[in-house]
Image (cartoon, rainbow, N blue to C red):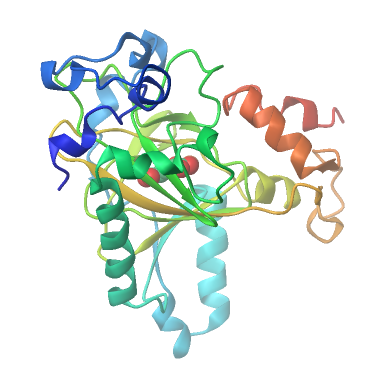
Length: 300
Ligand SMILES: O=C(O)CCC(=O)C(=O)O
Ligand SMILES: [Fe+2]
């Protein structure tokens, strides 16, 4: 696990403390929480913070595809994507060793001294790999309890252990992903929760599984047939959590619209737009699921 030393000054707002004020705050030692990391009461995780990881999110065994009917696997994926917007895959062909090596590499990265990590702060360079707390740091009002290292195509997220003021902050608030599909290697610390039937469901960490979720763009392309589900990341007060999250994102000039072949002659629910337009609106709205699709919906 992470040493406290490596977390000092680099969690949540402290990334900007570190950049702007060049100080390592003592808040971590005090077990207190910086004021700007405290979520407004209606955005906190509330009583469901510790929603027990459960097995209701479908687990699809891709290894069975060798001898089973592919159509059956495809149907399982479609059913899960329609009902939950989420599923886990096991026996997917990525070796356990590669998954472990990748996770260990990123654990080592987060464990490096702050001075070494500082070269990845976005303002300092035009590197492809950057380390930050959130995309919209200066407009979001309250900050996330996480560090996010985006490495060309693979972001890695670190959710440091939380100070004693339990329940006042989150790693990531309720959102849907602004891309096609996301694959998460969640490690063994629970924290990912999906909102279904007005309840939070914890996604059980399974060894060597990928959690897959449907992003807004696939929801739009399938004209709402597949569902992008709201989810969030809660933090443990005892364990740091590191996840490897791979987003499949079209180029910002790509046109996103309901595919005619998939609309079943129903009127399209969304207009055509450039992906870049959507991504900037998403960032401006800090991913707020209540409003982020509004300008892209067609009023039929
Ligand atoms: O790390 C996780 O468990 C989920 C992260 C997530 O939802 C995201 O980065 O969009
Ligand atoms: Fe997400």
